Length: 209
Image 1: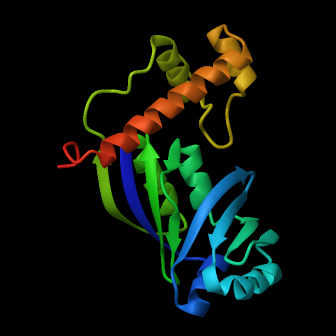
Image 2: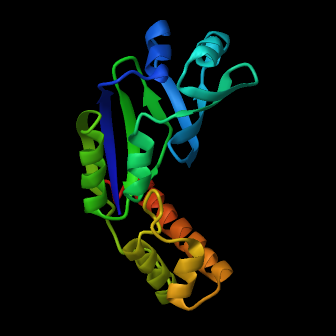
């Protein structure tokens, strides 16, 4: 697996960049869900929550906005393109994203170097990209069972992790000759192992030197 830190400067307008410009502050974003061309996320607004809420409520890009307590906002909005680009190229956001008035930072995990390359290419279609860091996780491969590895590799080959998916979970299960429930369970356990080993390798000082 690989980790990349990408800085993206959007060429188009985005309401989140507008928020950062108003307060000249950095905003932390946590993505919850992608659906079609919409993204649902939490904006950590802190003391700017009320002002951000009013701006988001009036923005054409925003489908839904809701205050979460006094410092956070739940938002569903049209995507600038970054989150779908990450998802369709098998990427996973490792941490919160950070946005300021000029750019945004994404920390991305991906299974293959080619996935990172494709994410960068997609980013370049709507902005200027700078690669701040790119590294491969050291050490042995995660201890997947042979069946888990088969399921993950088949899912990758058939486009299950692409966005939009080229194959459903039912079709993937049929391809593997197992039930849908068993297929999803193998995928869940394999993804958990891959991500856990990746994060552990980053936190191990002996592996990061």
